[in-house]
Image 1 (cartoon, one colour):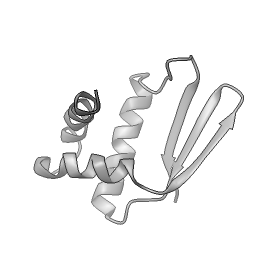
Image 2 (spheres, rainbow, N blue to C red; image 1 turned 90 degrees about the horizontal axis):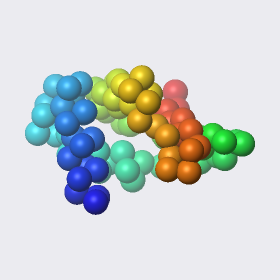
Image 3 (cartoon, one colour; image 1 turned 45 degrees about the horizontal axis):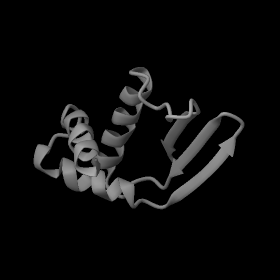
Length: 87
């Protein structure tokens, strides 16, 4: 399942990141990025520390926006997932 999720995310990241060969490494880096998690009613908020690389940070912003627009940030129990990078 983890492999399938990484490959699905990699397909999305490849649309925005200029170096396709870096996308899998970028995804794994994001999954270990420090941040804060807050539960607010029916919303789960995840605030990540901004990525060190400006290019990678911009790519992550674009991917998160696409996931929001495509309505892919819903949890199985119906809660909404809101995720962003700190400024």
